[in-house]
Length: 147
Image (tube, rainbow, N blue to C red):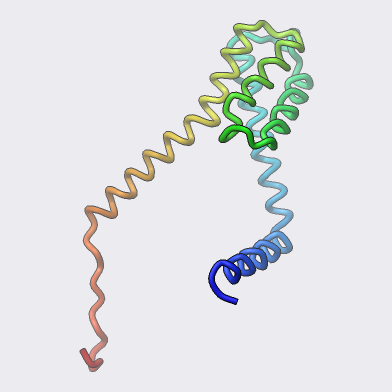
């Protein structure tokens, strides 16, 4: 076996090994990620003025969970548009003010989707700049080695 077939089998074996040995850590960090995203959404809602009386934390959690489920349908990259629509529709349906909910959701998506992309682009640019300005390291042959 060579080429793509070998690479696919190696990737599969490594994935099985990784999940078999690290499934607890993967599960914990996935949970931390989802809880963090939920917390950012909740803070955005409260910051723009959507009160706990209008939309409670449990309703926000239910809408958030549904929106995360929507991202499993790969219609747009990163769920762009779908997530916003699901969050806004769900939160307005739960009793939130349309304009406040829309503002909170757009701030939430800017913080959790657009900002990491911009930071990634900046880091890539910095990395490429370092690669262009740093001279390549030249290794010297060992003493007594034929040249």
